[in-house]
Structures are given as structure tokens and as C-alpha cells.
Amino acid sequence: MAGSVISQESGDGFVMYQGDCVEVLASLPPDSVDYSIFSPPFASLYVYSDSPRDLGNCKTHEEFYEHFRFVVDGLMRVTKPGRLLSFHCMNLPTSKVREGFIGLRDFRGEMIRLFVEGGWIYHSEVCIWKDPVTAMQRTKAIGLLYKQIKKDSTISRQGIADYLVTLRKPGTNPDPVTHTPDDLSLPTWQRYASPVWSDIRPSRTLQYRSAREEKDERHICPLQLDVIERCIHLWSNPNDIVLSPFAGIGSEGVVARQMGRRFVGIELKQSYFDQAVRNILRAKEEQPTLVEPPVEAIEAAE
Image 1 (cartoon, rainbow, N blue to C red):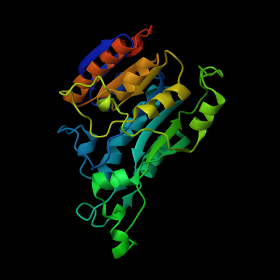
Image 2: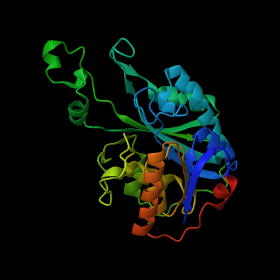
Image 3: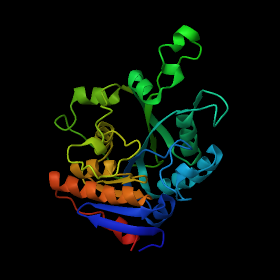
């Protein structure tokens, strides 16, 4: 096993690595991944673990982006030519305590610039609608409070949407992703093709699924299953290898396995890694598939 991997678990159609994604990506075969989907850590917004390798523990935004450039390069190396990568994010609210002012930081735009500077092609983008009332109730943001318009509405603002940004590695895709009307109908494609997705169910996440046990680890902001399903359906073939460098509790892995794709996940935090393995194994029990495991990825870390 490569020295960069703390531990490894594999099963039918998946492998999970516990370790720093930059180091693990360097141990995977080049041009081996068909599609990647993930939520990157939000710079300076959440503390995920106490590890100095954790991107969420960078002291400044500049340090975060310097660290994340290694992730961009690693993803470029392992992705097949012409294939895609999608990341899910939101713009970040600033505060008087951290930045000295209340406003927004263009995290989405800064992430896009990092990938483009790393050689990726900016392929597409979707704005995912979020309920401002729910956001107000959860965050108590002054800009969303109704009473603020009575005081000074120049402080009032709209809610913060989620974004799904997709990038493409230059080159010709060796394995075209094809669909038939039975697999992807015209009405479904029209819904996928919309630049705004207003039908994503925010509460349909892995940690709220019916099989979740009370003792299971909760992830701070898991990616919605609707988003993962839509992307894997549109941009990958059955049996393709789907990668998540920030696997968390395994949302991308569960959907990939249920949809007949192979999965490679990387997670640094021990409790998230353990929960991801349990969730992916449970997904296999719920919906068996006849898919071979990602042998190349497993061999690379041995």
C-alpha cells in the first residue's frame, strides 16, 4: 500500500482510501478516471478535522487556494482526456469578525479560475435554487431578515444559491457517453439542460436516508443525492469509474454503486471514512449490481 494511504477498504465495485487526496491522487494511474463529482471544503468556513492536511484548516483564503492547486493538478493527471469533473459549491458570506465587513466572497469564481489556470476547460454551470426562508431560519443572516427592510434595505440581500460547475480535460474522449430515448427522454434532457435547477430536494441527502442509524456520523453539508444522480446519469457510462477526492460519508459512492458505476473515494477524516465504507456497503445490499471492482485503482495503492 502506498505510504500516502492511512487505510484502505474495497468491495464489489468500489475502493475507499483514507488519506490526503493530494497524495492519494498521485498514487492512482494517469488517465484512469471517467468522471469526478464532489463538494470541495469551504475555505475557513467549517472545521472538518484537526489534521494539518485538511484544506478546511488553512489559515487564509490564499493558503487554501495554494493548497487546492495541487488537487487541481492531481485531478487533471488521473482524468481521461475529454472527460468531465463537477464540483458543487456556494459563494461564501463574509463577516465583520473574519473580514471586517458583511458581504459575499466569490468562492465559485475563484475555484473556476484555479481549474482554468490548471489547464481545465470551463464546460458548464448550473445554479441550484435554495429557499431563502430556510436559509434565514438556519443562519439568521441579517440580510435575509424581514425586519431589516424596515430599518435599511440596503443591507437586505438575496439568498445564496448553490452552483454545480463542470470542467473538461482537453483531448478527445476515448469512450463516448451515449444515451437512448429510453435511457434519457427529451423531457428529462430539457430538465437537465436548464441553467437553473429548481427541483433539487435539499433534504434528500445521504445522512437523512431511511437506512441511516442514529449513531452514524453526520456530514456538515452533504451533497444532495438528486444532484449526484443527475450528473452521473448524464456524464458517465455504466461501469465507468467515478471519483470523489472529498468523499465525506460516501454520498457519491452510494449513488455511483446504485447506478452501476465503479467508485474510487478519498477521505481524510477517520469517522467520515468509516461511515462512507458502511454506507457504500449498505447501498450494495439495497441495490445489487453486477459490476467489476476498479482493479487498476486498487493495484495502484498496493
